[in-house]
Image 1 (cartoon, helix red, strand yellow):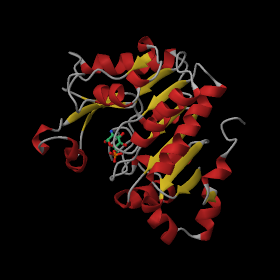
Image 2 (tube, protein in one colour):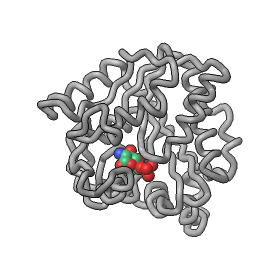
Image 3 (tube, rainbow, N blue to C red):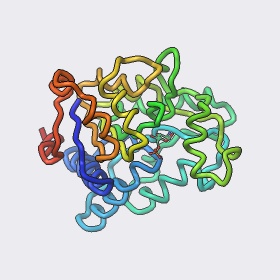
Image 4 (cartoon, protein in one colour):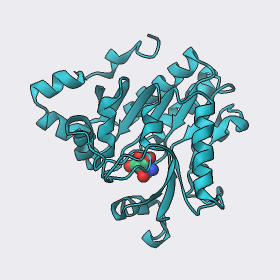
Amino acid sequence: MRVFIVKNYEELGVQAAQIVSGQIYVKPNSILGLATGSTPLSMYRHLVNIYQEYGLDFSEVTTFNLDEYVGLPEDDKNSYHYYMYNHLFRHVNLDRMKIHLPDGMAVNIDEECLAYEKAIQDCGGIDLQVLGIGQNGHIGFNEPDEKFEAYTHEVKLKQDTIEANARFFDDVSEVPTRAVSMGIKTIMQAKKVVLLANGSNKAEAVYRAVCESITPTNPASILQLHQDVIVIIEEGAATYLRDRLTLQQKERILFFNKIHECNGIIAS
Ligand code: GLP
């Protein structure tokens, strides 16, 4: 696990976009796992810039999103379909046939989960997975639980997640209570993972993900077992790490202060 602290949210987006564009440059037919939420927005903005300014070619790229709410149609402004088209898909030359999000309106959600998981496996798995993190340590919509749910599944959202995500809705009562999410194994099978965190409200979750014991009650902690994870954290989200990390922990997670040292990672 390599942890990089960047000076602000804008820088987080720049660095994350460089990693994603480097991945596409090295492997034009990459399978990308994509995330939603407020954190990756600056990354998507910079990716669109790189496409417009430098002609980054998305035409062979395949995407799979992490999750989607159950019960929100694609054109609902709070659906992750809407988010992705609004912030990335309609701005770049992605092939619409290569874009995948779980269908939260499927009549049979269990079948949808199986089909989604199969589609990922049929493509050979994800090359680069982008993740945000919930305040309760969730990744995708894998909520704290007694066990790690392996594959794409239906989730009952925790009340704290519903409340955290209510800021995007007119009222908390409008937040869906269920979602479809890639599972922990789906995520862990990705060849590379980039975890992004922004804001002091994520500082504790980041610390727990990186430093505390691996347990399904803290889903992001599983990433400590992945062999190729880059964690990009904005200063505010890094406060607990800075304060509490022991020397031994710093050695274990290969702690860097400057993202610049990460140059070349994708090309290697
Ligand atoms: C949602 C998404 C997660 C995301 C999380 C954090 O719950 N399912 O994938 O990481 O929100 O969102 P934000 O970046 O807005 O804090």
